[in-house]
Image (cartoon, rainbow, N blue to C red; front, side, top):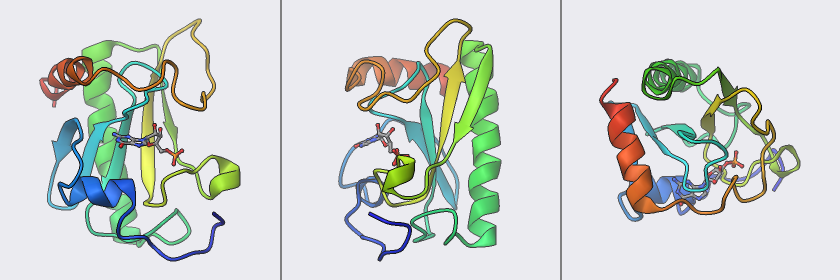
Length: 146
Ligand code: 5GP
């Protein structure tokens, strides 16, 4: 999919917001939702989305929705730091399939990074789909720092 297109109300993140598919929630407020990535690149890999914007990418997002998403990104990144003590935290956001975007509801990745670990993005996460119980335990650790 290119940078241009129509927002699909049945994209995976829309379905998560509608409660039609489960997610491991870290944080929610009136305008944003943060949850763990199901195919994590690193331990604690989280995603932040707007609950109301139908922007597919950065070029489409409303200024207020962007500010809300980034404020939540900062809040959740701080909690991840306290919970997991990473050496660095990467914030990533992809626009269009050639740039690596696979889900067309704007989202920000929060990736705790550790010295010596691989730095890239693997096609299906570092180890494929994570165990839901392990994700929930990790979410509990991070939520405790919010
Ligand atoms: P993108 O490549 O579009 O920037 O990132 C999409 C992210 O969504 C990927 O890191 C992928 O692992 C994650 N993802 C795909 N499907 C699901 C899902 O059903 N639940 C969750 N929590 N994450 C998903």
